[in-house]
Length: 279
DNA sequence: ATGCCGACCCGAGGTCGA
Image 1 (cartoon, rainbow, N blue to C red):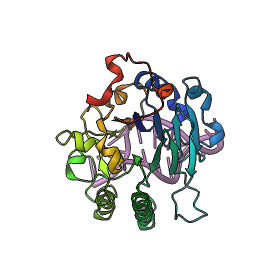
Image 2 (image 1 turned 90 degrees about the vertical axis):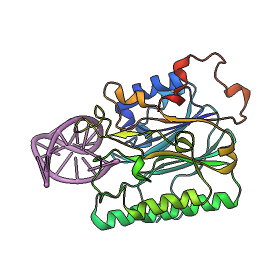
Image 3 (image 1 turned 45 degrees about the horizontal axis):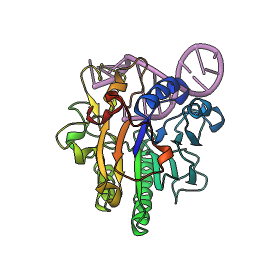
């Protein structure tokens, strides 16, 4: 089973990129972040043509997340459990498909809005930890994947790519990321690639891509039984070199996990359809 | 030291992102 996450920075601008990428990589499940549109503007038809059903948690202009799957999707949560009911930021989608619980997140950046903006991020992370711990207690097979807006360690960003006081580096942010790991989740990419930076984001500005001044801020965190089935995991760096790219690249995880035969892509896949070594 | 770029809003230039 192949599961992917991608912050596309506007699905309307990026829909041809996503379509071509789906045809090449053929993931079974994809979560998208920063679609930046309301649900009715999401280009569902483009993905239906490729055999993907979609669930969308939309918002005008900002944020917005979605899930695509070959198989039927049951949507369980459209917002992070525990958030204030009047919180309208579209940052969380929790679905069940292919026998798994898949959580797609667009975690608040925390650099805007002053200290209140940062505290919103921290409160959001506390609730995410509580959600993860609840699913662990239920012994569910789940993964949390998406844009976490945290660099967990000094190895996860290029020197000079962020100011030292950035919200992505602050100890409060990192401590809550570690709480997810302590809860029992496995960082799929870092587990398989301990010595590669494996960046997932390069700023549009200042030639960051050309100089490889990137950040690793998009993750796929696996519950214990899924971690045992981990086969491959990597960011798909090639997407950042495309014309008019998103500033993030997809993160792709392969699990040796049973799924219905009719959902399986064709047996003969071209070599470029295996992005797992493209760290 | 600051801005660089790009997307959103809309129809200018401010805001946000990371």
